Length: 254
Image 1 (cartoon, rainbow, N blue to C red):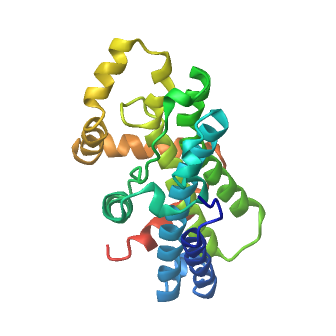
Image 2: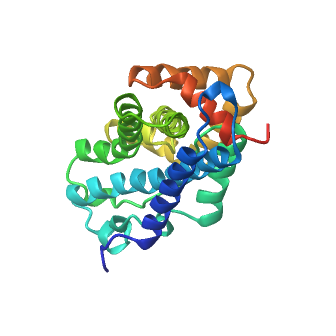
């Protein structure tokens, strides 16, 4: 199977780039001076397109570490092409997470790669396979915040990139939690007893769903989650004011 870069991935990058151009064209003289249709459309395209790009990179991170760790099947499955269709079901893994992102601001894990863990050479490498996804989100968030801090740019673009960076940090915080079905548990799982792994296998299908429902429905849970994300975002140099303006533009109907 070909490992050439997927045109679908390039299309997502193009949508993100177009969003960036629109934020520049729609930038007001100051954040407080108000929004414009171009700025709002640009932030929406930049953040949603960028989120889809990061979904591909997250799953590619899992796959490439697994490939180098001994699971050559990921190449035959097309996981090394950055093709979003290889990682996800369009409805459940792409459309639904974007809707949740728009409505609640929570970056749900969107894709999945099937790893042959029996082919991985060591427990440490199996942990690294799980860590690679959330680490990719964190690195993307760090690079975006660094770009906003170092590169002179119109405020509209800074707003869009900051919002996208904040979502990357939130995705890292969410995915690194040691909950069966999330990557954080996958980091620990190789070192657990067989009994613990069997118990985790039974709860894995619904444990993340319970977690998301708690975050959304439990009073104070969402606030705690976003506060934890804010701490990490500030630690990597993010500017909260720009990020929250970007979130307001993304949720323009509110």
